[in-house]
Image (cartoon, rainbow, N blue to C red; front, side, top):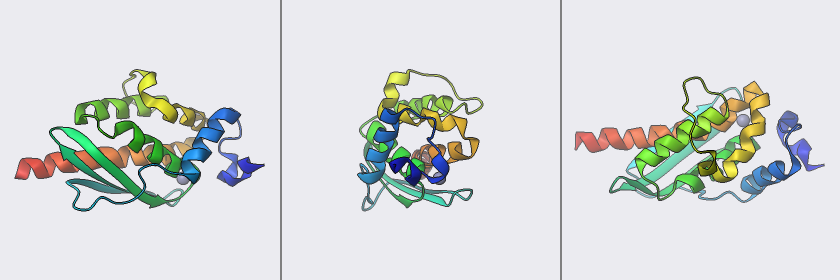
Length: 160
Ligand code: ZN
């Protein structure tokens, strides 16, 4: 059974349909790659699992008009990056920060504000990870890296 590929059966209790969505993003990630001359970028890692994510993005008129990621690690970390980049591409930085709050709330991150769950699209499939505290960091890695990348943009834009 393919579930064995998800290290340690992280999604053992998750619904099969959800597991399929996650594996689809893992096998055929969206927005994989690197943008040349990005004006927003950040690198993140989750030492607990060995996951790495590099985000590069283009911010124009307050919107993230393009975003790509590179990285390696477990299926959760990589599929989350695929799902999140798909969700936020083309959105305003304000919307992205709201989506990030909703996403974090999904995993019970302290202080995260609940938002409209509908805005999370495929990423809702990751909710089952919540039952595995160690895995939550895998799911949050790309979200935190994405936020860092737009913070990086704000900082460099302010310095200009
Ligand atoms: Zn991981």
